[in-house]
Length: 384
Ligand SMILES: C[S@@+](CC[C@H](N)C(=O)[O-])C[C@H]1O[C@@H](n2cnc3c(N)ncnc32)[C@H](O)[C@@H]1O
Image (tube, rainbow, N blue to C red):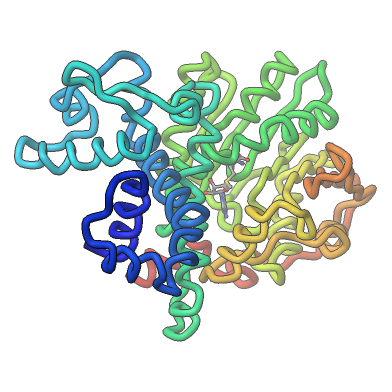
């Protein structure tokens, strides 16, 4: 029995006669014990809960148990666990019961905690995905930074799960939709190009605001673009929105768009290349077309943004979250005029940056093939 379990056993039996008084005295006077008990309550237990809930949400187990009580067989079927792994699955579910997230009734598992029930709700999916993102990507950045730095390791795009990130990004939905609502003409035909569309939610929002809008939505990652295309079909937008895999750095498009949008992805590009990729985005705009770029910026108080920043500092691609002055300078350097940044909600480090492709604006960027380093996915493919 480890020290912590022994201490707990003694604590739990405090009102009963203690058989071995000397052993108990040795345990409770161990100078390490107070610290261990404090850490157990303040660090270990929340981490266990967060890990269990992230896995239960990500595997679909929370949704399954929210719909109806499920026995071991049904949960195994839901997650695709084979017959040989039934007891291992039971051990994991029982850990969820011990943590207070699940309960067991008549051979079935049900949700117990308010957090588990809330995370299972469809409209809270971005929050469930954010929890998964914290556990799967943020924790490794904090945990592995010293080792990665010692060994010269860097995160690559395959260390992210594009589908999880596409869902978790939607925690910013209120901010982005507000910015889209401010920038988008509500009447008349508008041709939108969305770069790094993720789930496609903001293209859908724009299409709802302007019934004459048509769009091309691209995303660098195959599985993300495929899911976005499925979403467009499901939302009845397949005839107005073309969705495909595409990399801003190698896209070959005519200057035909009225609006080009980049939401929450400028940090996927290194700082020194941002002016260049923005110039590339401008080259797809018709004269007078506009840029709308939204992003979290450095300097906020949310620790999650600090870790996002750290992740990209540790990555082989991209760079830190933008600084406002620096990004505005890059947008101007890309040839945009009338460049502005506006806060969407006062006090929040989230900004919408806009600019105009002035009718006779200068083209200052060099051809992409020479100027830009390969995109993360292309770099990975080339390296493998
Ligand atoms: C954090 S997600 C944001 C998704 C979506 N824009 C949103 O706000 O919900 C960033 C997305 O940008 C995409 N992306 C990154 N670099 C890109 C590039 N060079 N070309 C096209 N898409 C890119 C990523 O694949 C990812 O899906």
